Image 1 (cartoon, rainbow, N blue to C red):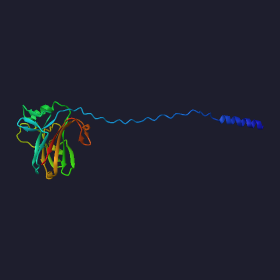
Image 2 (cartoon, rainbow, N blue to C red; image 1 turned 60 degrees about the vertical axis):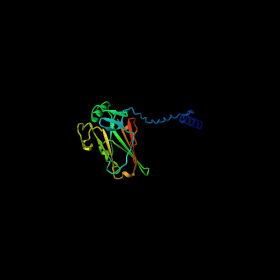
Image 3 (cartoon, one colour; image 1 turned 90 degrees about the vertical axis):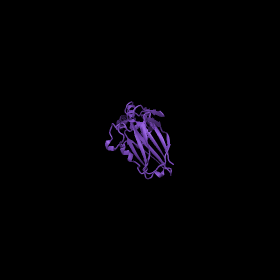
Image 4 (cartoon, rainbow, N blue to C red; image 1 turned 180 degrees about the horizontal axis):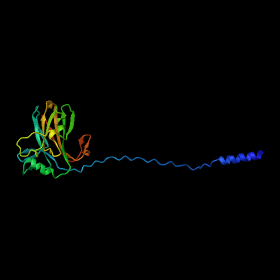
Length: 218
């Protein structure tokens, strides 16, 4: 009887045993995430310049010197889609501007104003529509003009927000000194064309199509 019980116990132990595979089970390899960095490349090479207008002649401006007096004009600066230093127009400025503008598709025009104070502090802001012209008015008052919409007129006012629409052209900008202008050491006016929000990084234009006028004060 004991032999039978012993045999039965061995059988049960063998039946309940499980063969263990000594081979190591490989864990699935972790897939490393590859960080893709955005590469910005601007294909907009629209020529652009900041000019002074005398009769039907445009002269490109790079640097000027201007003493700032409260509520006096620093200057009215024409914009033209060209890299030429001097341009003799065969029609009025507004008409000539539009003739160049329609050669380029899906672009907009904007401005950046950067001024440095005597204490070294620098402020930079963009003007992309008439409402932006009210920014930092304690230092500079800015006005946008559409010479094409007002062609044939001897006098016309600046563009107001209520009149601004998709057909509005920014053909000129006027800078005027405001009540804290005595604190300004220098001003940089940049005109640029852009086609999307990608052309800005941290609110600064980073595209190819731009022209800058430096205004030194004395």
